[in-house]
Image (cartoon, rainbow, N blue to C red; front, side, top):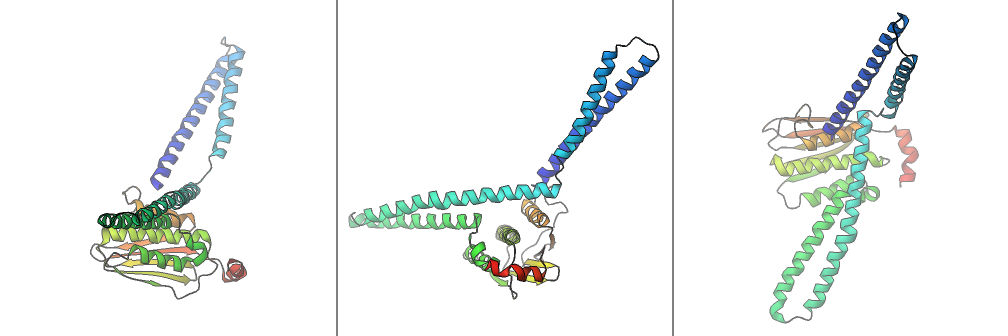
Length: 296
């Protein structure tokens, strides 16, 4: 996503350069024509007025065009993340409401048929029912991953714990989630960003790290909310620019942290595991206490 933003900014800068070059050409042409006109050369006044109008038009376009596309890279990244989150929620609803209901209806129809079929077909019905139940469970898991509805009701810690249980249930990784402080009053944007970053880190660990132990920590610090994800896997070499290096997951983490004025630090070496630390700005304690009753 960051790479797309850079390409967009490059295209915009080239277009701006072209506009300025056009404006300079108009000014140079107008100046040359004025010199010829003042020197007594035969030059229609209408041509001078036409070039003057063109120069003024280009200047107006440069001034108002710069105002209309004044979004900074951070703002563009924030908008793209919001669009991405909206699409995930839409897809989650489609999976849960449409496909989930169809699978549930198919399961009920199969149960009705199973009660009426002869005994020699019961084994096949049982196998088909098991397949439908597994598919329905996976659809619900994917829906929960795309749109973690429990964030609003259960909070960040409980939502992360539920996600860790669900994601690592079939793996051999020993994990722990440490949170020894109350996190009431955390904003929805920060909670969603912390959840998505942990989600992406778990995906990378399962695909590439070959880790045996994982520790996730949520900690309140004077500077803000600190999220730490540490594993003892095979590690990797973090890129200075993850987007250009093809590390899309790491680039997405960086974008989410930056969009909330936070910071992300990745420490990793080959064979020595990986540690990801994300710091989100935290509101002052007085502000947190003021809005905590409303959140409850």
